Every structure is written in C-alpha cells, then in structure tokens.
Length: 98
Image (tube, rainbow, N blue to C red):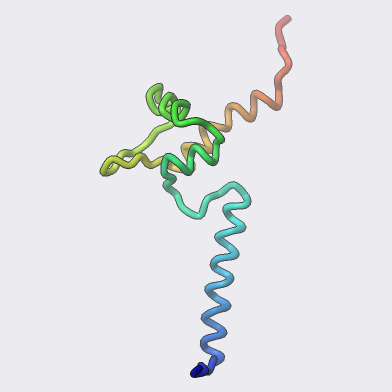
C-alpha cells in the first residue's frame, strides 16, 4: 500500500475547509440556512408543515415564491418576515379592550 506525504499546505487547506463547514453548520443551527433560496421540501421541514399547508401559503399570497423549471423556490427572508407577526402576537396575547 503506497503512502502519501502530507504537507503543511495540505493541512492549511484542510483547516480552511473544516472551518468553512463548521461556520455553515453553526449558521444553520441558528435558524439561518447557509443558502438564500430554499426548495419546498426544505420549507416544509423548517416550518413543520404539510404539502397542503405550503400550497395554501402560496395560493393566498402569504409566502411569495419563484418557480423555475417546475421547482418552487422560497426566499429565506420572506419566510422569516412571514413568521414575525406571529411571534409578536404570541408574546402579547392579552386583550386591551376597555
């Protein structure tokens, strides 16, 4: 079995690749995907919703999308903005009627 010599340049390159992957994983852990555009299956998984619910969000205009070659793509920022009002309502759920 032939052996391969590892140089310091190889180690440096490995370190850069490893750090890049770790940053990507940390961003995903914080709820920020590493990519801007998400496919339908990713949105369903992120929001824990069914295909029908995702279709309803598209049809009623709640969640903007872009269709390219039969694939639906959703901007992560649009998803985040869609969820903002829900989070504010949950935080202040009391009624202020007088």
